Image 1 (cartoon, one colour):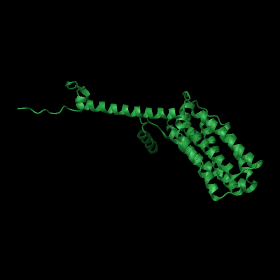
Image 2 (image 1 turned 120 degrees about the vertical axis):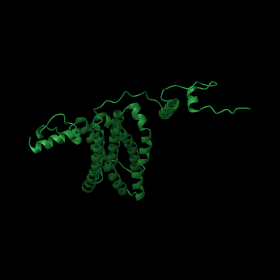
Image 3 (image 1 turned 90 degrees about the horizontal axis):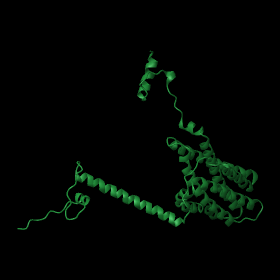
Image 4 (image 1 turned 60 degrees about the vertical axis):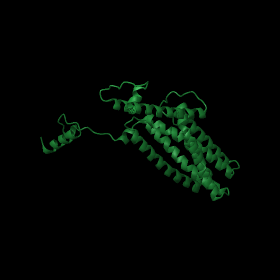
Length: 292
């Protein structure tokens, strides 16, 4: 055996596969997690859907900012249209987990895409054919922010259903990277559309992007949704379940302390004056003074 082959055999042994001799030609080849994910059809569709969402998000912000300025709005109006959309997104995200648990992430994501398509088409129609005012743009921006906040939460829950547990970390990283690149591309496309074709072109392109997002069908199946009830009842159930979990954890800790105090043999001290053995183990009886 040559020196190169012996080094190769030693390296294989160090990696945990050293029960047999191996040559450089028989070493196992490792597949990159990124290549493995991109070779999966459902994840490719999921990545493309997130990319279209990111492009449409930044394209809408840029187009509505230029539109407000062209309509005679002030800098405050531009900031209001971009900032007020965050408020409903945060509020909706508080109940997003409960809605996803009841209705399923797939159904919510599809409705999210349909509502965004309707909002984009309505804005494009107002810009091209009908009279539009500044407050119209602000209201449509706030509505789209609420819908996108719910869709973002449901989109994250679908990752664990599309990929395996080993690929989950790489899938999340690749999804966030694709979203960042898509948002940069959306700003570039929006600037080119406004400069070349005017304020109506970005909204037409945005409508096409939203339609492309609706064409994507998540290839996973959600768990069976629970019966639809009031949102206050959902949040109350969440608080009750959390309180029950805390109490259960406390009972387990007290039981563990009782086992430790009672000794390794598992024997318990005899109860005294009606006290429970566990209480006797945790709280020893006080010493009584002898009366002369």
